[in-house]
Length: 113
Length: 119
Image 1 (tube, each protein chain N blue to C red):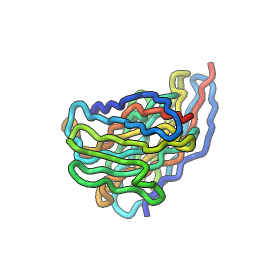
Image 2 (tube, rainbow over the protein chains, first blue to last red):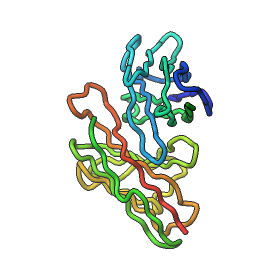
Image 3 (spheres, rainbow over the protein chains, first blue to last red):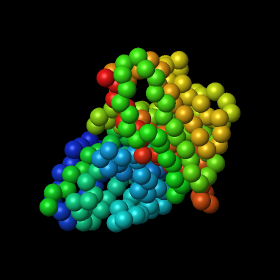
């Protein structure tokens, strides 16, 4: 089946620290992969995406590379800021499943000054 | 990306009453809309998928008579929580699916969510 396994949180980092949030997946077809961010009290916003193997999605200093050989899509940022504090969700979609999205459990990130 | 709005953003209702939540895609036509429920500090749980002009497909364990979904147009879907009870209190999020803005990949565009509190 289709599923996403995400690193459990919460994660607490000091400002300017390096961030990695691990995400691995299983899929019956060829998935597109996404990272969404949810700020407190808000809905989800697309952070970045990748649609094929070796693609790198990037946005706002965050990056993730679609690794088919390891079925992973780890999120990284070289220097986090307090404003990055949020919950991050890894997700996949496979077209032959009606475009349904499968979400990881979310990882809460808190960045302290 | 596309813009999806939800109304209301917060609602408090008494037990036994019904509440309607609207989800609108503002700048593209969404043939499919999804409704999610999110409990505190948890991930999104897909409740149902609705296609414009047809009946919604509910996920296992979701009561279709309690959570009424209507998708009458390509830009509007509604979720009605009927005879609400305190255990229905949650954060409800909709999303509109499609290829918006020249995108080559099917994406879901999320609304900001509706916080429902049943007293």
